[in-house]
Image (cartoon, rainbow, N blue to C red; front, side):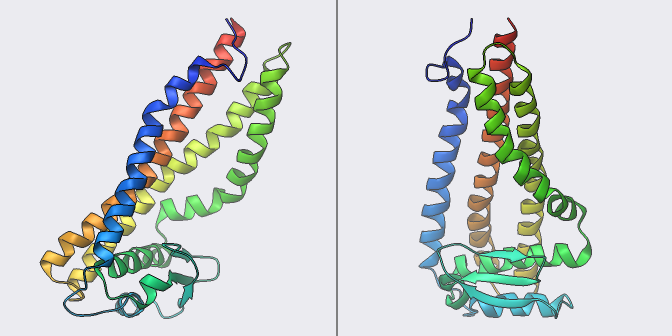
Length: 231
């Protein structure tokens, strides 16, 4: 039996992902805010942390810039710019150091030719197009009850989003792993502060796990809808 899109019992498939996403958002917010208030003993700012790590790894062609927003930190491999939000750039907290080190982890990945990062960067244009086009085709396929072709093509395009999210997981986990090694080996944090930094990075990583779970369950839901249409 086919149900109209506005009354779709397959939404139940998404409930675990919704719960995980809400928990991940709570976890990252509460953990980062908590450790924004804890200053590291050695007093490195996020900017100093980033510069120390980059220099220690022989990376001298990456600029460090301050950017607007809260936790808007990211590494831009195309322009070789490491952008840190104001609280991270100027802050001397555990969160500031951990986040800055994580973004340096991506810069190190880029410099070392880390394969998952290279693959993820290469498929970004394809994923952006496929993600936008997929929902147009899916919506058309849902309301054009005479055929499932558009719906199936849309689902196939949406699958690229799942692939992207799955590739993102090792990229983010590896960047955090590199970050923790760097800040401890370079003496930026103490051993206890390393454990606290890991809590910050683990909380942030949970958001990527939630995103991957959401994409997988959404794909499963769409496949279920398509199979019902065939029936």
